Length: 382
Image (tube, rainbow, N blue to C red):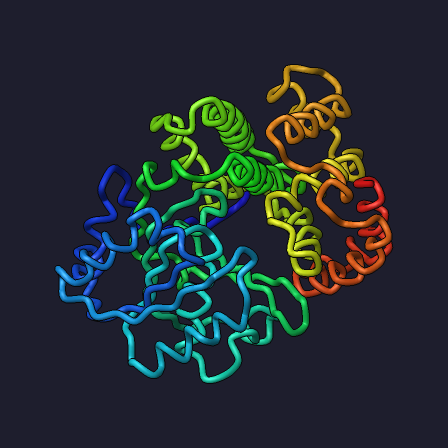
């Protein structure tokens, strides 16, 4: 194993009715006021909004609201939140929703403590040196945002979807009640499953060193996600399956799986961000298109690990067959696996490749993933 430092400061409050204590958790952290960030209204329809507000009021937590965060969250909405924090001198940010809401909350937390454009963090111009505390109540599991310091935002002017990561953005407390996720559609359940698998396999395939323990963790995550996804398709009210899905999803991107590996990177996410930025494709849907194409292109660079994947996940001995089985499973659960199925014309490959190559440079992957290489990968997604 390689040298590493592992630190995760987030406290997880997992279980039924834990959302009713969010005000208590915030108060216990010494916070007196928050910006409440949420999406386009589902938390009001479900009754979660009233529970959160009641808990905040009960514990004397003052708040302002920022509603309307969308899937593939926008920089313009983040800037609205920063202005509210500044105007009302708020102490922290509370995100109630899925990964997009939490990504926005983190961006606001960083931007509120920075005397400049928050986008500077996303293009690597400056590093985050301080941020407001972040709290979350989750309604969707996929991105593991509830237990990591990552944030992904789309600049609606430049059409760039970039990310930033800092332990300063790790939530202080995250509430996970599987019951709050019971209304997630089968479509977004599928996209969530793909996202979790993507988080698991990126370093699994691209690292230069593969400790067996780490590989086994990844394989366990993938198999658990596949099993619980199929269980939830059959019965969306299966609390145990919902809870296991939520907990497993966190492990895929909370810093655990890459610890001790030899580097590794996230080419599937890098390429997919162009699909989301230019065509507003749901992140998991875009990943379902990119992953099989990338695997077909990349497999010869780490054939032993691809062969292991095929054997451990699908009990087949051939790397190509393992890729085919994964692609078929994506289709089985309702995710698109071609550009056309995702509503993207094949003649968009040029534009997508240009956009993605810009992010590759920001992520330090420009030499390996030029515009021409990305184009070659996307052509396998036709």
